[in-house]
Image (cartoon, rainbow, N blue to C red):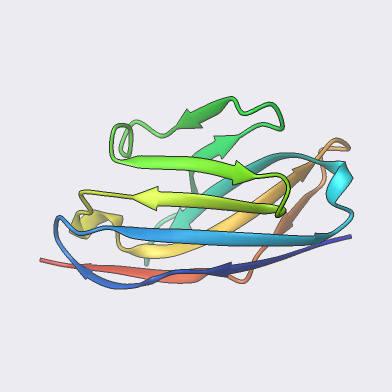
Length: 116
């Protein structure tokens, strides 16, 4: 079992920045990758960024160059630094822990709203 708690969402103007955090607890040693997804109203949940245990990162094309995913293994925390935010980034952002068994766990989600 893995528990995830997200924080850092909020309301920001276009061009602004936010930093999301995802604190993990439980079976930490079983976590392989940490991922951030988002879901906008009326749309499917989409993968935004991922980071492997070894630090390899991947990003959706829509956020490349603007978002940065990182993780602090000592603190069992993953981060998503979001810069140059756009209204189309408005969504509920979810943290996901992918275990070595390929089972995934989700956080409760945090709302990010970008005003134009």
